[in-house]
Every structure is written in structure tokens, then in C-alpha cells.
Amino acid sequence: MSRHLRDIGEQTPAGKHALVVLDGAGWHRSRDLEVPANVSLLRLPPYSPELNPVETLFSILKHRHFANRVFESAEHVRETVEEVWNGFVSNKAEIMRITARKWAVL
Image (cartoon, rainbow, N blue to C red; front, side, top):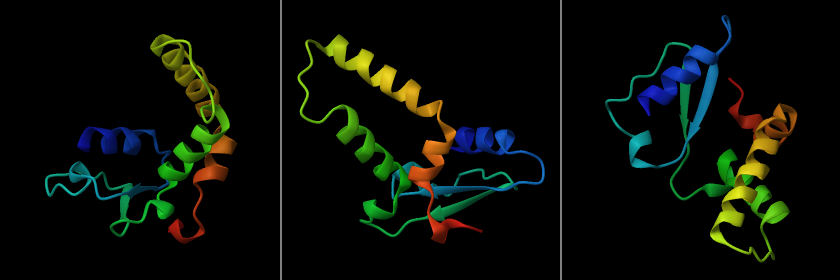
């Protein structure tokens, strides 16, 4: 997790600050986390998936691309996941629209 936070800090433009929303995963709560100066952590309350932008993202992707489908094989599932994910991550505006939370603005 510390490596991930360092990567986020390095990718954050000079003069900007990153906000990382965390759920209750054990690696999110480690006292040994190294948090860069240009990164802040926002820990969500326990049992609140509706507040977690990633849960919203996964729900949308699941309903748009995977609900009520039959796949021919495990390989077909893997290929579809890769295709959907690569298409999604190339659309930054859509990511921001889905994951934005008014209450998360610093």
C-alpha cells in the first residue's frame, strides 16, 4: 500500500494534492503506511460501501457489462474483463463522473 501511495504521489502534478479514499481493508489501516506529503487519506466508516467510489464503479461495470450474460469459457470472461477495463480506464471523464464525491473535496 505504501508503494501504491508513493506512485500516486509521484503522479500528482506539482502544486496539486491527491485524496485517496480508503475502506476498512487491513492494509489500509496499517500504522506502517508511508504517506507522501502531497497525498491525504480519507478513511470511510465501517460497513459503508455506498460511500466508496470503487464500489460504485464496480457496480456500474458489473451491471453494464456482466449482468445476465453467459460466457463460453473462463478465457472469455478474462478477455471481456480486460476489454471492458481497458476501455473504461481510457475515459478519465467517465471515471471522474462516477467516482466524484462532493463531500471528498479538500
